Length: 142
Image (cartoon, rainbow, N blue to C red):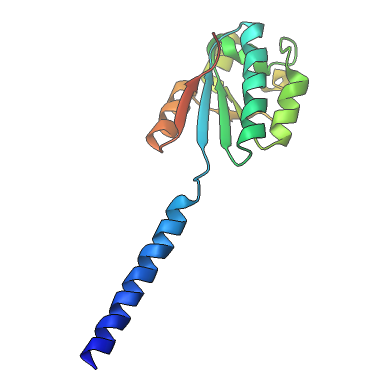
C-alpha cells in the first residue's frame, strides 16, 4: 500500500512538471513601448514600417507608441505624413498616445490630434511606467 501511494505521488509530481514545461514552451506575447520624440518625417515613416513588420511576424505583440516633444507632429492632422498608416496600425490594435504636457507647451489643441489617438499627461512618465511594468522599450527614429 505504501508503494502504491508513493507511486501515485510520483506520477502526480511528474504530471505537474510536464504541465509546467508545456506552459513554459508557450511564447509569451511581447509588450513593446515605443517613444517617438523626433519631428523628422523619415523617422515617422520608418516607425510605421517597423510596426508593420512586428505585426506581421508577431501579431500578438502588444504595442504602444508615446509621442512627445517634436514627435507630437506625427499625431497632428496638419503635420502628419503617416496619418493613413497610423489609422491602419490603430486598426491592428496599436495604441498611440499624445503627451498633454507637450501639447500645452506647443499650443496644440486636442482637435488637431488625429482621431483614434489617446492622451497621457506626461510622455516620459508614461514610458517609464510601462518599463516598470516589464514592457520592452524602443526609442523610435534615427
